[in-house]
Length: 136
Ligand SMILES: [Zn+2]
Ligand SMILES: [Zn+2]
Figure 1 (spheres, protein in one colour):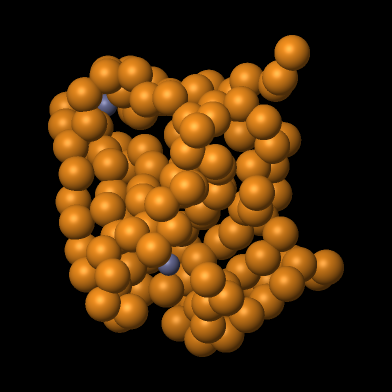
Figure 2 (tube, rainbow, N blue to C red):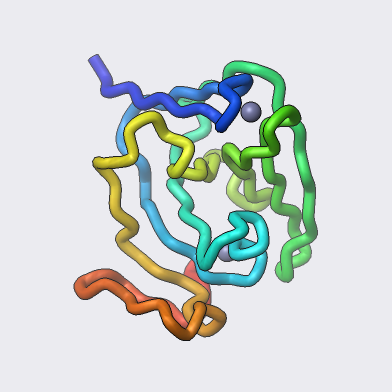
């Protein structure tokens, strides 16, 4: 029996579920993640697509990344809450916005990336990997 985790948007119209352990959880301080989250950084939880199920109708926003590939953001059409994303060059994964999980107590980002554009007041926690740009 695999562990199943659930999440939902602010209004509850969109729900999702995934099984298994995330591949990685990181904080991204790039300007796009700051913009998308409306915050100082974005959190990304990488999960195998085959373990991920979305329940409800989602809207999409497709943006061209610096690499020339596209990044697609999926959000609730009713409350606008970003739920997850897709990276064109990595078709086997989805990138969940883990603040939408029902239980947010169990995860912690293991890496901070694009720290060259991080807010100047942010202090990086000890023991986590800090990358000026991105690794993937
Ligand atoms: Zn919603
Ligand atoms: Zn980012």
